[in-house]
Image (cartoon, rainbow, N blue to C red; front, side, top):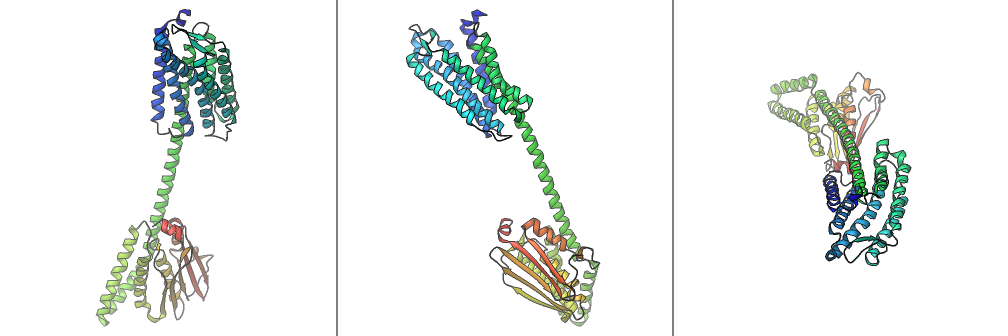
Length: 446
């Protein structure tokens, strides 16, 4: 075993093999889609430092005894010693960043270790020139310097500190995580027992082995998190699809409510009598009825907000048809100040329909229906008021008069605009429905 201490080829080959393994881990980490996570950034930096450290140590062995390559020997020695210290600093930051994925963790301990490692790197750089830690003789042979004991002292101090940090943060890590992360310190400490017989290659091989285990831990953790995120995304998509389905059912429900047979029969019956008494009016009514049906079908296909002007035209078509039937008992007032906003399709029209069917036309002598729009600083307000029979707003869901559409309208306004529908009513006085569309939400969903 002691012969390995002096055999260049096996040491160079083992160190280059370790650097190749580290390079594979580096490429795998750098090309992973989770590379932007904070602890992965530190881990990638750690792998870069480990790769260059191994190359430096391999170069140190390769050029050893070559006086003509004295500059390269010093550079390789600095890479081996200096990047070894940088490795420890990067590891503690990687550890803290990994723990922070689960809980709040202070960086003060990592900062302290990093400060020690930083000072040590500066001393190593100075040692390249004054030989206090290491030097090379005129034949290019390596020798420990008079203060080399500080190298061993700093190594042991940082390794023990790293182990204590893993134990301290153990409450945030599973057993597998603790054992894996502590291997970065434990494996080199175990390898130190082989240094009297084989120095220093076992230390570098131990570090490489721990990096493999840490890579497996991180990759498994990230895979688990990605799987959980995909499950959450799938759940959100399912909820969104369910919401879309409910909205579609809502639109269909409103459509069916508007196309009840009695309404169709009443319109057709009006057209029938007009054909005999006023053919021109009958023709106009057929055009309006056709427009009404077409607009309903178009609205069924809409999944986004539509200009209020389009909804307004549909409302007027509907009221024109009802006016033919009810005549002077249905008075209509339009007080529209603005149409420059958007609404979910078939939201105001069902409110107008309810005002006609369950309000004005149910009251002896009829009444007046008023449609008004206003613009405030923060919202657009649409108000449908009737002087009809009124109803009990607390029990309209179970009312036999079927106030169809109110629930669907409220749900669609909330879902598509984050707006609201407020209804007030008093028996034999009338009903007021107020639709409020927030400006910001209305603009966003356009």
